[in-house]
Image 1: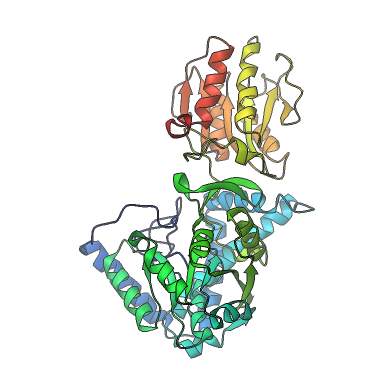
Image 2 (image 1 turned 45 degrees about the vertical axis):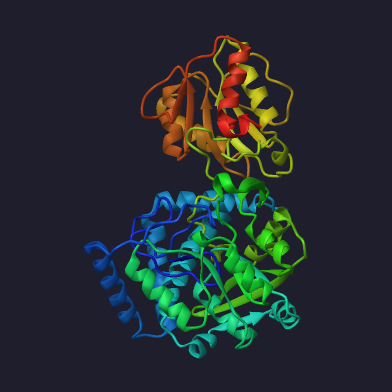
Length: 489
């Protein structure tokens, strides 16, 4: 079961995008956005996964939580050595999350934080598996809680509380939260059932025996709303991409599709809202910090409060989810009904692309102009070899010098220097001159989208015919931003 609040539970045969299947024990999903799933019958693979998981629980149960957490930290450090792909992902996320800082960390500090994130993730995850089998009073000795009054006071006055939280720390410690409010208080998370029905039944049974109320994301809002109206607690994981169902607003300054669910539940039920951070005090010890969110806060304000919670210790956040990824086909689109133009004006961190222009074709500049009209938060680094038409006088268009005669093996270094020229990372490449060597270098750099004109081949995620005039170049820009859904609006 993937819990979207309150607790996070082990999951087999599923993993965040890009992680080896079955290795990480949690799965990430936007809240309540998918169609109901039919009840699954366990397969042989499910039974094997279940047996392996229970065996692992049994082994970990023989030693203390402190020892298990230390072993997890060692495994996390080892993962940092052997997984360059995931180092890149965590690096990218941390660069975005820290780009708004008064002094953005330098490359050496980012590398240090990436390593610490791996170490913390290993300790937190293995510690969570151990914690799930502990008695509540035993686990409570490993947790310090501050700010509980921000939940206690509303509950004592008959108001419910919506808990806004992120993938952070030892998620299992959240199981201690509702019991702290008293034996009569009901509460629990909105969750997505696990892919493995055997593990799903196990985790549901454990939670309900501990008094938690579980809300299946496929069952709608009536259950969570009823608990909130009766003065209970509902927790919602809020740091994930919400896809086409989300609301467009900045998250850590970067435009993103975000779930409006916490604010929606609070407004409809009169519930209070709080954020929670879970940070590591020492090996096997965690701090749970609760902060209030203003009544009637809308999604952008709620997210700013969530950012504050996550900033308690960024390296305790599970940054292995590609939160700000660009789509490989339409890298400037969010696939929502809402056209992103107005929301993009509120972003303080740019969506970055590296671009080339075809020499002797001044009309191609119209593609860049149109992109900036549709996505005013974009920053376009144009590789300028000195033979281009004059570029628009716009601070969001930044010439980056390069020599078209540079050896192919030096192109990767060129793109890396371009990437490092701003605190936020590059998101995609738009190679309007169809340079195949640059496309390969962009792919090796890890850019999810490599778009070109007059191209074909594996290095490209999307190719377009070379436009014949300025209108065609503007239409190409629209293809990268708009979908059929929001063109109609």
